Image (cartoon, rainbow, N blue to C red; front, side, top):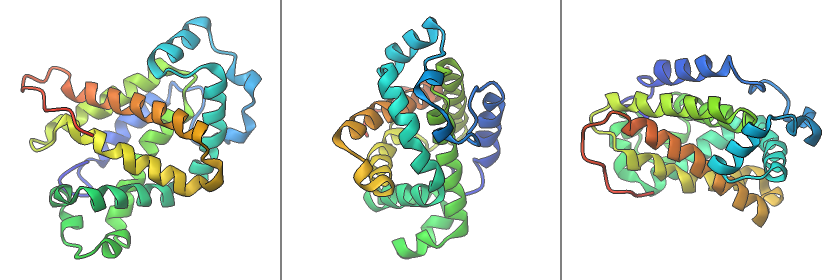
Length: 217
């Protein structure tokens, strides 16, 4: 997030592409082409890291990789829905986004090209993480870098990351429809917690300021 819809794009996308070079699966790979046997080709260390850090077993990772293809196909719609939900439930955040603060209504926000651009940019970071769960270490580094890049905004607090949790889950549900089962909700919650935890950790890295109270971005 940033003070305008364009300020964070270079740092976030640079961090994303820099880490993406190391990924085994890029966001341009069709997830439906990945089968459970390919997913299982990780080293034992990678599998152990996955279960420890992400709290997903091999079967759950396979399910979310297969499920995520539906989000990747509708990434723009999902991104816009996610940020629309964010601003609907956190109106105070609108003031930090110049272009959003000028929009008198949610419908006006949804039709803003700069809003859409920022929303899609953030969703691409999540997409990079979700699509590359075979390389947990690289995903962690990506998220730490993106989180740290937000420290340049004096108004930003680490707890703001957690404000995205509910809007993300609602947007995913809306995109997947009946495919968003109770089991998939459980898996997606674990995944978004993993992502937000590392974004927050990156932001707090070498941060001398007192920790902000924990609250849901």
